[in-house]
Image (cartoon, rainbow, N blue to C red):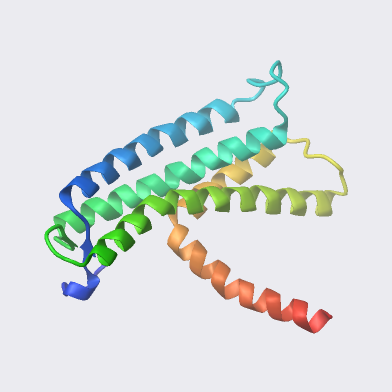
Length: 176
């Protein structure tokens, strides 16, 4: 269970209006993400429209990342409200802006992670199999599954990327 000390430095500064807007925003994203995932995962649904397997994987994975992210942040926001870890009356303008950007931007991060997962999964599949194209519906399912978790754990995914990027950059420097 997440616990944080009840001190001013651990409190988010958001107005009541912003909190309500955020709840509406996340519920709308949750419904939209689920609709995208369902729309693009169904086998054969897009054969007549000419949408490729890769496009379906991108859209379905984006939907799952948004779905996972909105579930996580709805929960995070209502828990913060219940536990009174949101200060709706105080804080500087910068603290309010930072908190709002934090909440509004996380779904955008999860979209980027979904694209990264689709590209990474596709690259790995093509390298291992030796094929030139993605040929399996299961590719979409794997991408969706991983994208949901990347969206749900966007904060942890960011930390992981920060950690791994340092070692990747160092390896590239040594390779020159």
